[in-house]
Length: 257
Image (tube, rainbow, N blue to C red; front, top):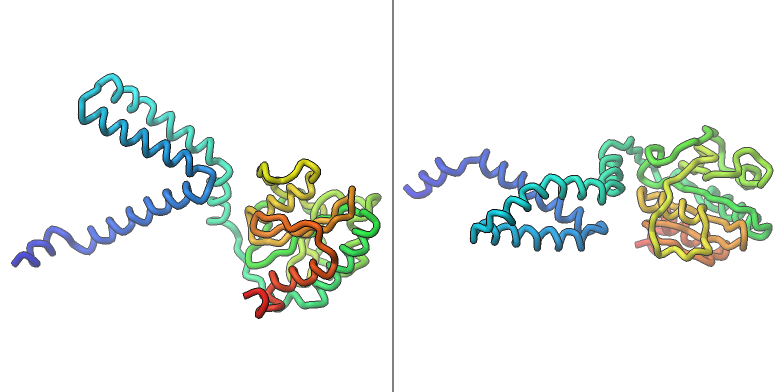
């Protein structure tokens, strides 16, 4: 009898409604926790508790202030989390292209490493972005379409200081150079030492917003660095670079796992 009454009061639609709201609330909390908003989240919880207490003990003036500040607070959250919100919306609507990692053959990695070795020895600045599972087209700008086979000579020619395409990033997709002279989003992290310039900040930026790998050759020192997942691995020699690229691209599955 009790089960029949409960079933009448609580149906499948109510269960779906509760689950949907729970997932939505969890998503918001998770978004705040994994971004720079964790401190703001704690402040919002404190203010919310304070507001409830003000309502319970009928502090009318304070309650009125909280009600008026609610709209301003929502607007402030949107402003503070604008980069994260833009990134999340971009990923929802991004043109996802699954790339077969097997198509990125070992010889392609070898050509990239050889080009970086040549440019490092001669202090030629370079920025090479290697796509993995997702396309980077939604977060890059000002590109020149190439669709050319990856070769040591082509990479060096692109980044040679007197060429028209040297100022920007190269996008490698599979075994092809898809774009050159690309403008990448810059990382806003304060952890990057001041001695590193725009190339390294752009490499970090693209690795923060996508799952791509970015290889940087410093024009000032010839140092080779690699950015992935928002982290910068510095002072790599060509052999170390080759090993890391093969691991990250799944060409050495036993070590990558």
